[in-house]
Image (cartoon, rainbow, N blue to C red; front, side, top):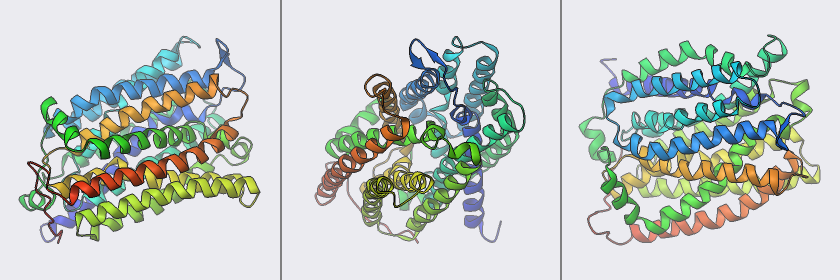
Amino acid sequence: MKKNPEAWTTALGAVAAFCTYTSMYGFRKGITAVQFDGVEFGGIDYKIWLITAQVLGYAVSKGIGVKVVSEMKPLQRPWYILGLILFAELALLGFGVVPAPYNIVFLFLNGLPLGMVYGTVLGMLEGRKQTEILVAALTASFIFASGLVKTVALLLMQQGGVSQLWAPFVTGLIFVLPLLLSVWGLSRLPAPSEEDKILRTERLPMNRADRKKFLKTFPTGLTLLIISYVLLSAFRDFRDNFAPEILKGTVNSNPTIFAQTETLIALIILSLMAGLRWVENHFRAFTLINILMIAGAVLVGFSTWLYQLGTVSASAWFMLTGLGMYMAYVPCNGLYFERLVATFRYVSTVGFIVTLADWYGYLGSVAVLLYKNFGQANLSFQEFFAFGCYGLSGVYILLTVVSYGSFRKQYRKKIPGLEPVQVKCN
């Protein structure tokens, strides 16, 4: 460690971040493995009630987190992570104890604290020479973890005899010890060095005035990016929450399918994101990230077309749409804004911007769920998802291209109060 402290920091941070967020998913995503076939309440599918309640809680959490995460001090972050997740697990206990449909409210309470976890973890990783690698590990975790947690919950129900109502809580218990160890590892990370601050711009908490100033500095680019992110986040979340329904039939014969597909996607995304570490010019890296996001949207639409032609199987289509969505989604959960801040030398915190985008993103997820139930109730989950993929692909590409053009225009001219300086990341 003394001979190569940078390598130690990178390894510790990457592993701890990956394990922390993987563990958090154990307290959130267990419910997505449960189908509740034929169960309705008020004429609405019971699972739609549950997912809507959880996502709404998550969205409210993001709204609260815009202030809480951006103002949080470094020493508070590990305790916030543990406290937020403990609250979520207690909500799952209530979900198991209280009979349906009165337990729906506990899914809202489960999502209510968890929306602030990602921004809190990200705040411990940003503003470093190694941030690309650290954030790549963090974002790969929620791809891998989504499949892992579904598989764990399915195995608990199919082979462990755990009921559908108790599966989310028991799944969370399995991840308690990994969570404690990984958060301890994060707490051992040293603060960004002076060299990090020079290379990546100092990261500081942001009060309300700071947040407003940042948004006014990049009005067009950020607005269009957030609109595109709302659409992307909504259908990525739909794919994640209703994966068993989209692949109905395949799941029963192969409960490990989610761990298999999402692990492969995570490895590909991890490699792509980590590779940006060696792109020294910040604006060039920002450009490459935008190209990657657009390519992901193309893959979503193209793979759906191939599936409907019968060229690829349902499981292959599920994997390819996931890969495309995460190629666009993952950069917006850290690296997009990390390079944006570094390009314009803007003293701020990436956690604020990511949490703000997520707030609108999860409100979009609620809107899609409601539209599916009330506007397209006759469509199967698979058909609805396929049509959504086409719409996502076209609109997302257009919005991303125009958003990037706005940032590029601002980069080429001086912004009052900012000096777009390029610093090499040696």
